[in-house]
Length: 79
Image 1 (cartoon, rainbow, N blue to C red):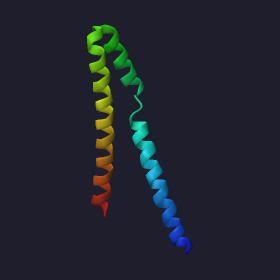
Image 2: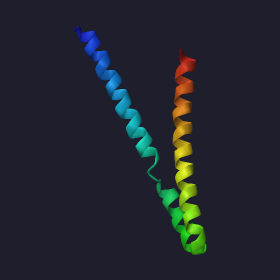
Image 3: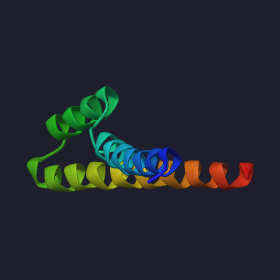
Image 4: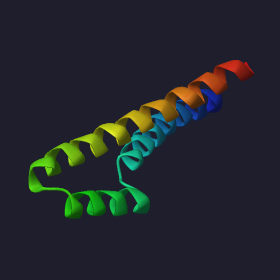
Protein backbone atom coordinates (compact mmCIF):
# COMPACT_ATOMS: atom_id res chain seq x y z
CA UNK A 1 0.00 0.00 0.00
CA UNK A 2 1.21 3.49 -0.75
CA UNK A 3 2.26 5.94 1.99
CA UNK A 4 -0.48 8.36 0.89
CA UNK A 5 -3.18 5.72 1.35
CA UNK A 6 -1.93 4.85 4.83
CA UNK A 7 -1.87 8.55 5.77
CA UNK A 8 -5.50 8.99 4.67
CA UNK A 9 -6.62 5.93 6.65
CA UNK A 10 -4.89 7.18 9.80
CA UNK A 11 -6.42 10.61 9.31
CA UNK A 12 -9.93 9.14 8.91
CA UNK A 13 -9.50 7.01 12.04
CA UNK A 14 -8.31 9.99 14.08
CA UNK A 15 -11.29 12.08 12.89
CA UNK A 16 -13.69 9.47 14.25
CA UNK A 17 -11.87 9.33 17.58
CA UNK A 18 -11.84 13.13 17.83
CA UNK A 19 -15.59 13.29 17.16
CA UNK A 20 -16.27 10.77 19.91
CA UNK A 21 -14.13 12.76 22.36
CA UNK A 22 -15.88 16.00 21.42
CA UNK A 23 -19.30 14.38 21.92
CA UNK A 24 -18.29 12.94 25.29
CA UNK A 25 -16.73 16.24 26.40
CA UNK A 26 -19.89 18.11 25.42
CA UNK A 27 -21.87 16.03 27.93
CA UNK A 28 -19.62 17.03 30.85
CA UNK A 29 -21.27 19.92 32.67
CA UNK A 30 -19.39 23.21 32.85
CA UNK A 31 -18.72 25.00 36.15
CA UNK A 32 -21.62 27.44 35.57
CA UNK A 33 -23.89 24.48 34.74
CA UNK A 34 -22.90 22.73 38.00
CA UNK A 35 -23.53 25.93 39.97
CA UNK A 36 -26.90 26.32 38.30
CA UNK A 37 -27.86 22.71 39.06
CA UNK A 38 -26.82 22.98 42.71
CA UNK A 39 -28.73 26.22 43.13
CA UNK A 40 -31.86 24.78 41.51
CA UNK A 41 -31.70 21.53 43.46
CA UNK A 42 -31.08 23.21 46.81
CA UNK A 43 -33.72 25.92 46.35
CA UNK A 44 -36.62 23.96 44.82
CA UNK A 45 -38.62 21.13 46.42
CA UNK A 46 -37.37 17.53 45.94
CA UNK A 47 -40.15 16.62 43.48
CA UNK A 48 -38.59 18.90 40.88
CA UNK A 49 -35.04 17.48 41.16
CA UNK A 50 -35.48 14.70 38.54
CA UNK A 51 -36.92 17.23 36.09
CA UNK A 52 -34.04 19.65 36.65
CA UNK A 53 -31.42 16.91 36.07
CA UNK A 54 -33.24 15.58 32.98
CA UNK A 55 -33.53 19.09 31.54
CA UNK A 56 -29.81 19.68 32.06
CA UNK A 57 -28.90 16.42 30.29
CA UNK A 58 -31.22 17.26 27.39
CA UNK A 59 -29.74 20.76 27.12
CA UNK A 60 -26.13 19.50 26.99
CA UNK A 61 -27.03 16.91 24.32
CA UNK A 62 -28.81 19.57 22.29
CA UNK A 63 -25.83 21.94 22.56
CA UNK A 64 -23.45 19.16 21.45
CA UNK A 65 -25.63 18.39 18.41
CA UNK A 66 -25.87 22.09 17.54
CA UNK A 67 -22.08 22.43 17.75
CA UNK A 68 -21.55 19.49 15.39
CA UNK A 69 -24.09 20.90 12.89
CA UNK A 70 -22.47 24.33 13.09
CA UNK A 71 -19.03 22.97 12.20
CA UNK A 72 -20.45 20.76 9.43
CA UNK A 73 -22.26 23.74 7.89
CA UNK A 74 -19.15 25.93 7.98
CA UNK A 75 -16.96 23.17 6.56
CA UNK A 76 -19.34 22.72 3.59
CA UNK A 77 -19.66 26.45 2.95
CA UNK A 78 -15.86 26.74 2.59
CA UNK A 79 -15.69 24.12 -0.18
